[in-house]
Structure formats: structure tokens, C-alpha cells
Length: 251
Image 1 (tube, rainbow, N blue to C red):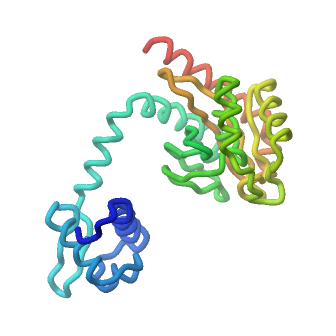
Image 2 (image 1 turned 120 degrees about the vertical axis):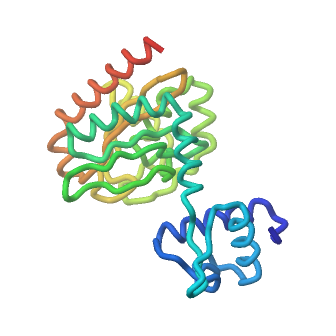
């Protein structure tokens, strides 16, 4: 590829694939360049490389490009290799089916909660998210849950790295209040985000140690519905945590 900056080159590959994922139609070289905001010459080099590697193919009438299934098959092989996550996802699917809410599995990555997998809810009005989405750890029930599993020194270091930016009017932006909120979550056994990442959206999450790794599993949806169903949903999360503990004991 012509671009000598490997980080920029990698970002452009991802931008290109996300552009196809957003439009879901074949595109010409000019359209791709416009979508990912790069010069046509750079776009040509990028497309040429991916075409040679079998990740996109060319349609000739008119000349357009579209991804092959190579990337999909590669991603599926990679996903099959994450056995602990696959087991957690199977239990999260039961959680989503029982509650009708969107279920989320996450881990802490630096100062963000990274969504490893998402099981869509069945309610007409539901929280929408995708694997790979990131949320500030201090605003997210998932983030707070995983933070709670850190040892004291790790916990202090994690908070030292964070900038407690206000994402919504409900975001906790001072450290003592965040520490108190996480301590309260530890005490009751689950963690909350009440409109702290997205206004009028509530998250409920529990912390889980599985396969030696720290995860959080939660549900998210409209604040009023989750508030009304909190007791029932917390019981479902407790049942999920117990089931994962049983699975973990046999691994």
C-alpha cells in the first residue's frame, strides 16, 4: 500500500469495510474514496491490495467493488477460537430471551468498557449496540462492574488514568462519587448506569470471573422499564452468574 503510516493504513482498511457495512451495495472507486475521505490515488492502492488478497472482488458492468466472504469466514474462525466468550454468549442469549432486553458482555480496556458481544433484545423499543462498541468505563454499568474486580492498586491506577468527562447530565464526574457508586454496587451485588451514557437508558450489570478473566455481563434498555423490572432482572442476572460459576468450576 502507498501509505507509509501503518496505523493510518490499517485505519483506512477498517474504514473501507465499515463503509461497505454501512451502505451494503457495490461501490465504484470514486464512491469508496468519497465514503472514506481519502484521495483517489490512495483509495486505488488500498482497493488493489484488498482485491489481490481476495477480500474484495470487481464487478465489471459498471466497474464497482464489493467484499467477498473471505473476511466473514476469517472472522468466524477467529470467533470460534474464543471458547470462554462462546460459553458466556450462550448464557447471555438465555438472559436476553428471559428478559427481552439487549444483553451485553464486556471487558475493561484501558479506560473504556469494550463490548465483546451483544445479544439483541426482542422488545420493540430496545437498546441498540454492536460488538466492538466502547463506552467510557465510568459511565457504564459494564465498566463499573469490571472495575469492581480489580485489586486496590489496580483500581486506583485505573481511576488515575481516567478523565471523568460528562457524557450526559447524569454522568458521575468526580472520583469520590464514582468510588462510592462502585462500592455500593459491590455491596448489593450488581452495578447500575442510570442515564449516564445515554439519557433515558439504564444498564444493570454483574461482575464475573470466568476462565481466569474478568468480565461483566449486563442488560440495557429504557430507564423506566428497567427501573420497574429491576428486581426481576437482577434475579435473572444472579441466575446467570451462578450458571457461569458452575461452568467455570468444570473447566
